[in-house]
Length: 608
Image 1 (tube, one colour):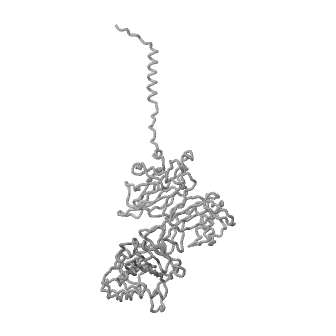
Image 2: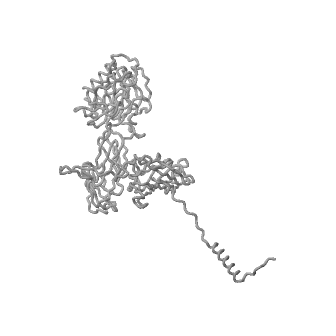
């Protein structure tokens, strides 16, 4: 029989209190939320980039087929690497016909001022914070490690609920590659960029980036610095053997309200002091005479608050440079380089270092919209017709004097007609077409509208060699001093022998290009002038001419007449000229005498 022990009432009461206490404690325990996920940037041991679409809305005008929308986004760049990131540059792959209106803490790398069309993507260099330090050297100070770029602009066709995200983002500094690219929802994308080739990370432990190479280099040196102003020297050097810069025009944008007080060695294209007089500059520098402007390319640059100390200098941005009959250049943003050295002005054998130096690298570019400024015509001893420059080779005439066809090919001409301005060629062209039984369209083709044209004439072709004659015509109102031209002959240059009137040689480092320029006395290509009797004579172009000879020993099998005797590229003062679309053929000529007379006339007129 079991024995039942009776518990004391006090013990039972204590047990009940203890259980109730434990129960209440469990009920009142606060619920601890799960830890927040680490930021995506924490997993990147390189340079982390993110693009966040913040907001957008439709803007006028209302157009269901092509609606415009405002967008606001943020590009974030974080240096989680071990070393300082110098002159960072980030690419955003815009793809919705974006027009960028503003960008904080960055500029466009192609030198364009805002607003700018960026539908094919854009590279953003940092400004004014172009260097991002590492966590190692700042003890994790994120204010020195990262930068946020606020982007505002217009895009077309992507309205809510869709989001106009770019195709991709990346760091374009040399040596970096993209890893772990991903999207977070439909409004955020991020990527980690790491150094793939350690050998390409040149200058990682240096204070400044190494100086770069390019077709044209602009140097911006601060040579004297004070609290509220500094003196800068701008140097321009051409490094491309096939280009030149005549009557150059240089432009840039001040980003921090600076202004030029004195300029020496150059002059401003437009002097407009209104902004300085009535803006913050006039208020801060009261009593300053804003009408000074002199010439030597040095500038005294005045700064504005809060940059009023001797160690703060920011180079201008959005550099552009062009000239007369010269190629187009695209200039990158300035990069900080080691201070330039200048000879001591006293003549002592010592050098003085600049306070600070920046380098702007400009390279020749051929934009899709660019039209040539020179053109080429072809002729040959085996055909009595010259192939003139293409119709509208250098663009259409903005003020046409008569109706003409932009699509009809240019009419073949007798060679000496090339000496006559296009507006006076009609009768000669129609007469030659009649002789050659060439069909003439009802609407005659328009002219080439080129300021400079070059005739390439295959002069002879024999067993051991061949020759050509080049004639340069200046139809413009300005003369060219120290002009030069270059021709590319893909298969003939190894047999080059001599240029007889010009100085000519094979371009160093090339096996297909001959560069030529006038000898002393022939280095001036005059502008177009009136004929001897302006009332009845056509205007006369400025001309220069030379014969070029080739040997066939080094170019066995060369096809002079059908292909190899005609250039595949021609440049004048660095600008690429438009070439004809056809070559002279070996079709039967009307008579050998007619051909000889035509070319003799051309040569004699040029020598007169």
